[in-house]
Amino acid sequence: MVQGNGDQEKDSLANTFMKISADKGNIYAKDAAFQNYSEKVYEVLNKIVEFISVNLQAEYNRISCSSLSQINTCEIGKNIKDMIEKQLMRAIYLIEKERQTHPQVEEFIPNMLKDIYLKLLESDKTNKITEEIFEMNLFHDFGVISDHLRNLDTHDIDYLFKYLSLLNLQRRISRREIIKK
Image 1 (cartoon, rainbow, N blue to C red):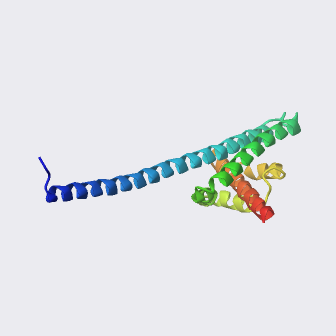
Image 2: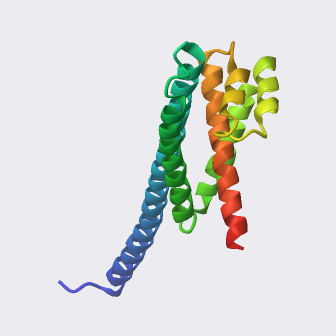
Image 3: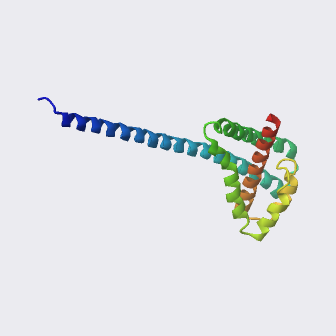
């Protein structure tokens, strides 16, 4: 049976509609893949920050809660510092690598800093400590920072260490960008 002119138009229209639908589907698939990939990058960065915070808490507990804290403090502190340095460099590498194809990755640190800062503002005590330690260096001023954290609960200490880690990360990225220019 030979198709009439009307049937050809219907087939042509159907094919055009299918092509448009496929193109839209591809766009949605690309958007979904892009979203999924971005979430994976955020997840890795979040795990790095969590790793750093946990190690800083361990070092804080070791030096603040033990009468034996002075034994091998420098060597143990250096090992933890080296582990944290590697994680910071890993995060910087990931951000610099991904910012070319996923520019929104640059918003990870400011957004997370904002979220944590808002949590720290909930208490006058943590707000005051946050202001006092804002300019301190995470590694060089760790003893002084530890002194400020006494009498805080574990959640607040965790938030403060995450906050300081993210500040350290943000400052390093800013310095690298200045050096590149």
